[in-house]
Length: 396
Length: 138
Image (cartoon, rainbow over all chains, first blue to last red; front, side, top):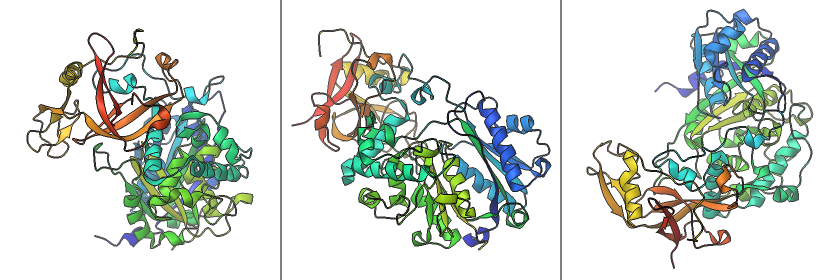
């Protein structure tokens, strides 16, 4: 095998575009995608004809209209050397950046746009209604059992995973709540964040149940918006307007789910697999991480991810997050823009965008002083997909 | 169950799952067991994930298992469930290995515990269909 470190610092994130987020009405996903691209190109100081690659993660409401080819033609991007639509749920943003980094490091393309946009919210309708409803009649066969037994939606599935962790390790709602409270404190300092009012642990416990053990404040927001980043070769990124966020390490983990005795897909994610290659490439250990942007569809996802990276032993994530360790001023800054729980729900683009902000040192009052190594994770499905990116302001 | 008509959605068999549904009506838990390697699986999977054999044979499982994990649903996604929220939904890990979605009955939600031993009960929800639910053992 080639030395993993061949790729360290060869590619960088050179541009970032974040549209208005949240309850922004009157635009579809394609509009948000185009707007995010415009902002990213402006941020980098590029012209649109310098873009030669486009990777798109269509959101739930994006088809048709914001797949790779749709967006290419909508934006008048011609003669691309790289184009694809990709789909690994919330791990896709990180995964797009990885393929883009490989492409620019090896000369297949020069500046690759990676885009996510979605517009599930409709005026006058709650976030809970945004992602569709249960079928009135059960589909035929075994799939119909989910309807018959009343197991609907992603909330129900993450509740099962969180409950398994609680049963195995004694994790409590108080532990999950500590994550929600800490992230809200960070969100208060992020002008893009949707939820900036402080919350207490009492507010967390008082928030309504969605699917026990998940309270409302365990669950991510639902947002309209778009985010785009540009991945460039390190050499080209240095000539652009913004300080490059160099990609030191990258990896993926897709553990699979055998759904039978002896297989644990509920308290373990793909992070150990993804971490192994990413950390080796970067030449870092968990002790070198200054800032974490961890995918947080639910509070539980943060907890299990911290364990799987080895910030604490498996099963000790609850006590680890208790208190204010993850909060502003705590020992381990996590989700410094408020994440998806309090900031905005742009799938893997939420941790990635805040990771770029922190790596550049542009976080304003929420900027973490030491940001030499920034961990950005993505998670898709029910802990089915995991992506790791390690970003740094230093080329090597 | 009660004398009132059953108002929740009732699943229907397809070709791949017909013996499972027929078995439930007869108070038997029928699953697939790979004739090549002996691995059990739920119906609806046409290939053994271990040896990739597409041979299939039906076999009767014990109906015993443990409560692998569960949730208590408070949201109403489906109009038929409006009167039953909050209700439990669960994944039971059968002795033979496969994990199956179900509800736990004869147990208050507050008493549910991860890994508690459970056994199948067959709930006649219509003349044609019995659902495989589980109850605590002992």
